[in-house]
Length: 393
Ligand code: TRP
Image (cartoon, rainbow, N blue to C red; front, side, top):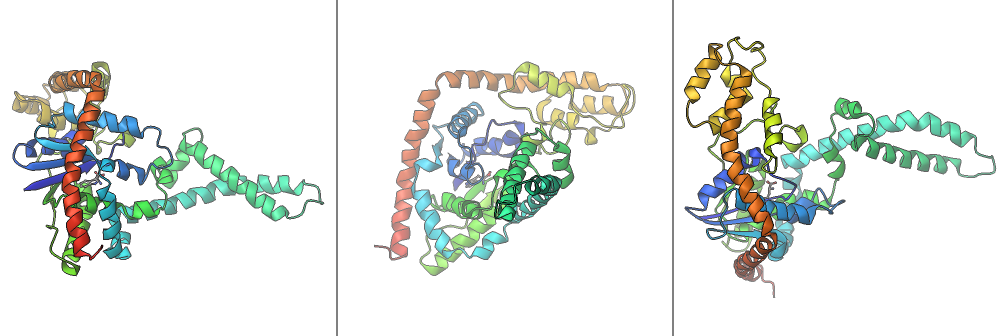
């Protein structure tokens, strides 16, 4: 079975990435032929305005992958943009993908919704400066013609400046909360590239004739679309692509330190790049069962993020911890200390590995470039078949 998956280089990895996806990849590489790539083009579908960090993020991701156990001897680890055939297939698949399939994609619908909220924010901010601007404009000498255009122009650029300030957290973060918009929505504009995101993703998979795609749950609609695109291609021209199936992880999800989904934007993640002190602080501040207020109150482990973490990191004594919590014998501070010890047993070798790998950064980059060539050779073969099937010269 051929396995294909990718990850966007959007910054450092946290425990959620590991338990959500990477752990699965690490296991799959022992049994199957695997292609894992850094989806740098996909990162650009949202973060195209500021690409300053892109290279650094790509390098960081290489290091995190290797530190977490992806093995270049077992899997082909490469970089999407180093295999330009992905773009060619993307283009051709774009020809046969109905626009409605993309517009109905939940991620795209979310974006649309968020853009609507953004418009609301714009309207709100505009309202707040409108009177002032009108006052100022009315003070302008009568000779100035076209005051209305002038007013519109000032209003527009002032609103834009305000929005940026709001997103930078300089003013009115409450307003963002109230209107339920995030910084991300602002940078994700309504572009052709974003609409085409799942088509590019389909090209990524199909170009290797991927059969299984290990991803997080949030990716299911995208994989479904890849299947539909493959089917449509096969029907229109020739049976070239297998229909890829999504593979979800069996491992339970790890909640963030506050019990919500672990995410950079919630500020509730533990990163592999965190120092032991940072990890310690985060763990000691973790949310626990809200009904366990005093040390001796009986707790409810199933409702407690600390216990959810114990389940992943505590190999021995899990049952004891559970019952000691329930009977009020184990206080939360002590419980967190135990967790921290086990968590560090997991994290410290990874931290050490990262440090080692960082010293060989150039070499690792080279390695990814080299295996991109290997991936490219396969991609080229598929493209030959595709061109032929579509009667391209
Ligand atoms: N969209 C995926 C994500 O955000 C990344 C990705 C890009 C991908 N291309 C892919 C995943 C192809 C699987 C297969 O996680």
